[in-house]
Length: 145
Image 1 (cartoon, helix red, strand yellow):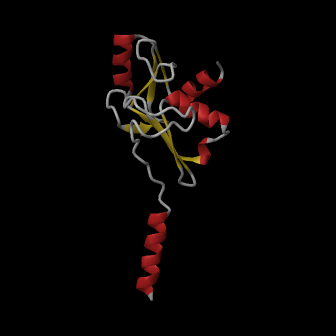
Image 2 (cartoon, rainbow, N blue to C red; image 1 turned 180 degrees about the vertical axis):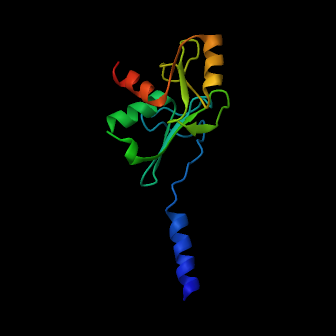
Image 3 (cartoon, rainbow, N blue to C red; image 1 turned 60 degrees about the vertical axis):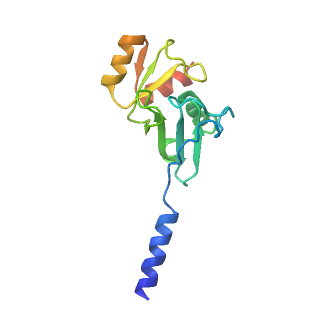
């Protein structure tokens, strides 16, 4: 009997885990603008508290989706963006460092690039110019425009 209860608990736990789904570049569609996600340097993803994953072709689409759907941080389990210096690598958006530079063109034209650390972001800023933001200041900047 204890074995059955333990097995059922394990199955329920596995079934309820909130999973990051890899972006299938060239096939997946952006949940916000509906364009096909093709650029491996700019994809993004959210996983809701209920476990549903939504994929985006750029950080600006992710933020636009959050804003239009009135999703709060508490509604989300994961908010992920791609590290420009490591294409296809999704990183935590809430701890990422962002660079807006017209010389680094993102798919939707806001020219937002994401980095896992400030040192790398500052190196890219030296090379390409632009302004550095954290997650909260980037959201405010885009919302207030």
